[in-house]
Length: 262
Image (cartoon, rainbow, N blue to C red; front, side):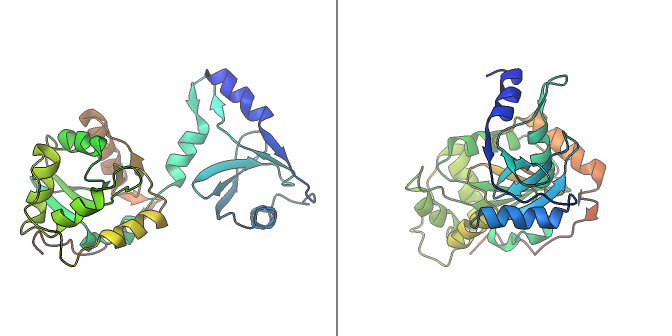
């Protein structure tokens, strides 16, 4: 579907809802109206957009649009045809953040390369081919500190949980992880130790991280997928320009990273 068709489909793909008109475009009342009409909805953000007088609302992990009376709900992407970009996608990138200081870094595998000045957290599935592709891109990136959270997506990779525990329980878990991801060398353990796999799964559910690899940069920006090295360098450069701040607030290190050995 081309951008024009997608833009037109947004106009026709709407739900007509019964609603009471609002005297003002009050964001709090709009949020309450959405929650009233959809009791199971998790509405985390409502604000007026600069598009056609619509309000945007983050419902779960989806950005939707509504009129001030919450009479119509628009589902889909809004496309800027002149720039040929998704305005919805741009907003999602800005709104979907995971504050760095909320990351429990003690549950992650830590690797420092060079001066370690550029930090990144990665949610990785041991059996995910795209995670292995990302690790191959990252192995050429210098001056980096990587915190890897072992997040098995067992609906896709039934054995990933077992392998994650084996990696964590290795005498040198950092070496075990990269040996497996880069060389397919299985850890020589049975995975029978105190491990954080279930806690990481809960963390992923909390922040709706349902795909791997998913990266979190120092400013809280969440990026899914195996970015090529050039794109990774651009992301690190972007973070450097902002000083690692998310929404204008300087982030602070959450916790001392886990040691490499159990």
